[in-house]
Image 1 (cartoon, rainbow, N blue to C red):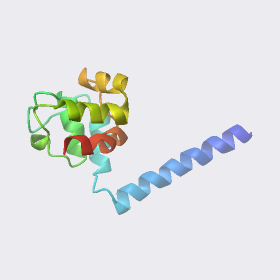
Image 2 (image 1 turned 90 degrees about the vertical axis):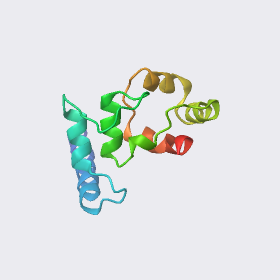
Image 3 (image 1 turned 180 degrees about the vertical axis):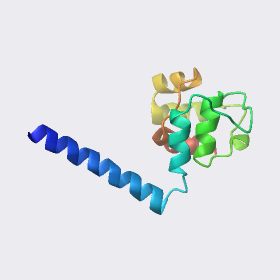
Length: 113
């Protein structure tokens, strides 16, 4: 019984967070658009970046990042910065097409802009 109560409390907490993010929008992120991108089978992008697949481009655009301003060459300093924040294994996964989480995008954003 305690497990169910705890589970409901966690679900309620996340629901409140989502409602807060949609109403207050403190990060100027269109949460509805992000969720649509994450669950859509067909993503589209306004720009064809050489290092990003369409799904990555669509996610970045949905959180307000202009993909045309993302560097088309990555310096060793930028890569080292991303590795120091996300870890080498995760950076390799993203390079190979894995979709970065919203948190990872904001964590590593300073390495590239």
